[in-house]
Image 1: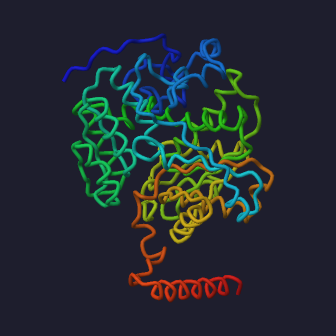
Image 2: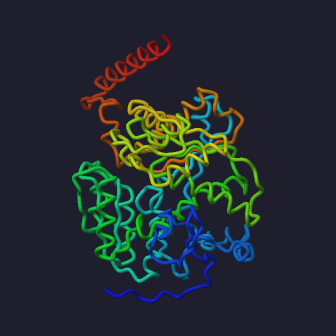
Image 3: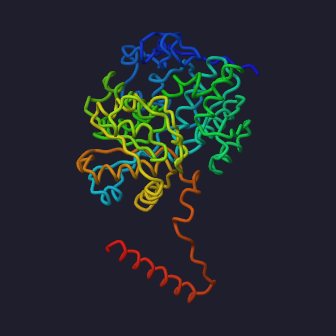
Length: 431
């Protein structure tokens, strides 16, 4: 399959740079330094960006992540734009009152386009760059959301697609990938085993794996979650953010996004505290944080929060560093607390999040109760996926519908039973 040549514009990125030793490489499909095996990251010409961007130009741009194109590692004048990004920043007043906070916001990527998770951001960037580099087949190793996004956006772009997932994923996420007709490989193993297999396939078949050989470009898409929050807060940075931790990449890129806006003069500098959330059943970064370690000890995942169940997180040490140097925190919560977090967000703000979001809300609650978030801080919580994808997690914890006959007296009896149960539940809470 041949790929049509796309019109190009002058690039604002200049190279790939090793995060460890600083060695630079041409911006091709590579992700590991040949000298020290450190991860590669996109390096930009910020003086050029400063001359090309302004608040007004961004606001006049597309209603998608591509309003920030000068900060993204693509050259095409026609990036793959499926309306990804510019998701709501919800002022969460009812949840704030429940927790005792004054200025709480939810960045709601549970309604992102096209597949209801933040992964649509990273895939839009990765597949645009894959097309620029001449790939006709794209792939990924995924815990679910990334497979959904890669399959959907590849279908839109006319790229062949083969994705790899653990065989025990939630049914909603499997169906949410199959509907786009990619080739789906369900691997009998956990995510880390899937990822190792994909590294071999990438080397053997020469495909564009968004989170392997295209990872430096892919990860840059997460920066847009930082840009949007700053713009939606009136071109200001928050005081504190709370985000889920899987590989650690999202966490580090939100930080990079804030710093880039400061670098080019779009926002004033201020100290932003970064706090991260993990599930106890897969919490290698939280364990390192609590134990004061500067290294990550891999773990075997065992949690309902499958979308963040990465036992050997590639960017874990960088997430640790950011949390510590910003005076943030990294906490872990139980599966039961995750379910409670999902329910708490739903019943206060009408947002149904998946298990990663439940983890983040539960950690937010834990941090507030421990006095680690001040009531007057402007706090932003990142919700990265939709609860419709992980309904199994809350099945049996949200009650059942009241079955009635099509008669008024049947309705009245059921309503009274319901109110009686509510009163008993409140009495138990008060006790």
